Length: 592
Ligand code: M6R
Image (cartoon, rainbow, N blue to C red; front, side, top):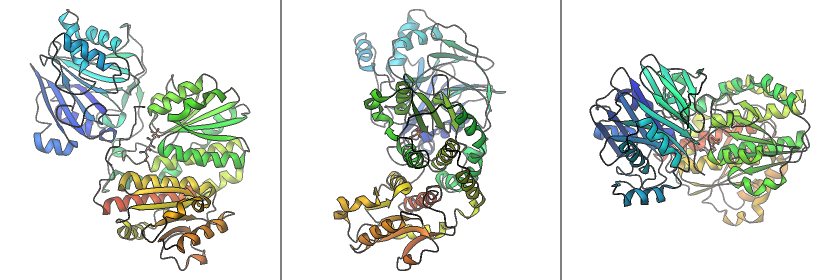
């Protein structure tokens, strides 16, 4: 996790760099720091979110046209000023920002300490400036010193490095942590992700693993680890700077929920591309989804769809558990990776394993991310959700679902399903109609300490995802269950202190799920039911969120989740929590 930015400009760098690093705060927000170059290295850093550190120590008031900055999600060392990046060498002539984990830092630190190097932090990163210091003292220039240093590192890194000895440049390096170059009229950039540079440029080079970069104001050189120059393609990004702004909403999360009607339309426009990919498929005997978190829940809906529409044995495996299942992979299996970021370390590790034996497909939101590149999946489908900044996935989940439904509809050659998806797009303006009611309901439930979410069949994963949203941004314990499973144990927990969210669309499962809700109600729990306006059985239930259309249980996951996202959002706000930056979490999880 963590976000890094570096730039070499024809004007003072700090104001631009701080604006850029703010756009990466979704990657981590426990501390922040900046270093610029004048005749010396100037560092300002502190623990806390960027706006608070900036208010306290004025991060933008620092001279120099060259600078690097970092926003941190702690791995080694508590969030503190000392552990905040940038980190420097003993003489404060070299400064480094790093995203990733140096796995062999303990042995390197021991060696450097024995040589007399002084360490000021508990981070793994700090070995890097000290190694570079050693190599520069041997007479190497900055680039060669970085080359020698990275050859000694085990683990993942995206690095930006400056030195007073070569005050016109930044050296960068990438291995298993994302890094891009941005090319602009006013100078050049390095960054962890595209939103950081969108205000400055749309011209981007996506870097690959084991590449080094030398960045000056007018030139960018990309090299392999032996310093051979590599030809790289400059790509033009279609995302706009506005897409990564709040656009008048109180939080990114709310804006991103409001983007969802449009996202449904945008992602449906991928139908032809998806059909083309499906046409390339051979007949698979087994399908396996691999993902984490919210993307795992989208995959579960994929499992229900494929099993019911195609009858192909399908399973969903958590990416972090995937290596335990590798023996059953073969060339009759299609492995589908679902990931918003395309950078999740667990998912990328699983992809490496799967590619050894099986055909792979990635469903991903971030263009140019690692899973889409040459070390990535065999086939790529893009969800068209635009940048998602809120840490809790909302619009990207919906766009993943749309891609999965399209994929299955094309694989099954099911025109009825395709038509139902088109119908959904026509109804999109109604999707957010219950927002005020949800806001009211959330005031009542903000004091709850536990919630249950239940659903059956296609809507069981919706229950899991609703509960995850609640946990993530309200810190209330939420548990998703298959409706029929409650009576096998968890019913013992139900009393009048526990609200239960019941997902009850019309369809073949309705009767059984309705009975399960009755069992819960008779034990005193408060019910919040999501269902149809025509459902007369719901008259006696106080809190209900009813849908105008008779959307059946197969399609319901595409609509009902929006209400559950809003419910979690408004409870979070009612509790005074910032839903965009929940504690301990980061959007892009690049550690295993
Ligand atoms: O980028 P990915 O889709 O691979 O990320 C997977 C999870 O880390 C992610 O979905 C996480 O659970 C979200 N914060 C959920 O809102």
